[in-house]
Image (cartoon, rainbow, N blue to C red):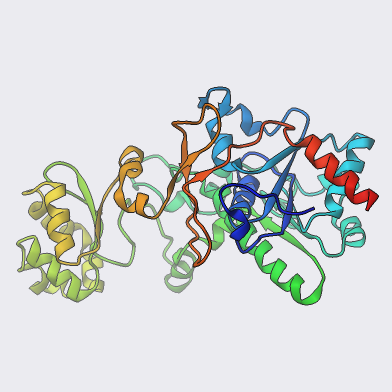
Length: 394
């Protein structure tokens, strides 16, 4: 199979010519294959006869799920029942023309269907096979079901998110799924590079729980270095101060001014030069030890002006700071638009629909301001079957 041409110049991407057979559904896997598609790969989404469950998740634009749309623009769809002999044969022929297979079933499901790694490696030695699951293919939890919130909890993320006096909360986006998708896309790309040298594919085993542990920043190292168990501390950083959200006269802004020269400039700008001369705030270590009292002093000063005024003054002073945007404000932010991070969706009924763009900017690779629509279920069956038939004849 050859990568299909589209108006958005995906043929210029670094994965041009790579064909991905996508057996994934809902979020972690589709997020991974969205990245591959944005990098130029052709993604053939193989759905069960009822379709990806995400197609039924609202809100809807017309009769199309905005959730499904955000993850599957520009992919192709064919519906196959892998328990049906005819569809199994079609699937096998798809794999024969593919570079990558991505799936997010529980471990062992594809083996029961006759498409386990041992069979795939023998039949398609160049295939890069990536499996994404809650807990991976090994370990005592391997066969457990998992969702984003489960791995956020078990991976420690919820233990350091929110305020200590509140009930536990999850991160406001599905970081369990997203992190797994990101790591999977990275592993697939690396495996394709290795395959280019060896001619041999790879088996990739991605655990959502593993990925949560991997993104725990310095919390794991901090615990093993000090013996202290990191807890929930709100917006502030555990080891840098001031590095927090601060109240102004009309809202909140975030400020990251933990380096001594930056802290000194910050204090001058907010009209509190006496702060950086105090022994309790003389360096970052002391400021972190005394962060509670320092926050009171900073908010006393910031409370005299609006967020907009402070952002202008602090920006002029080269202080890292920002407004806490909601999604409406984010969507109108000139920096976001300058970086093409809110893009249009083409297609009938999609005139007002927008999704997030591609954050990977590569010199010489076009970054289009629109995306093709997500596929209708089984939309590309005829095209795909025709390609398979031509390849068989050839």
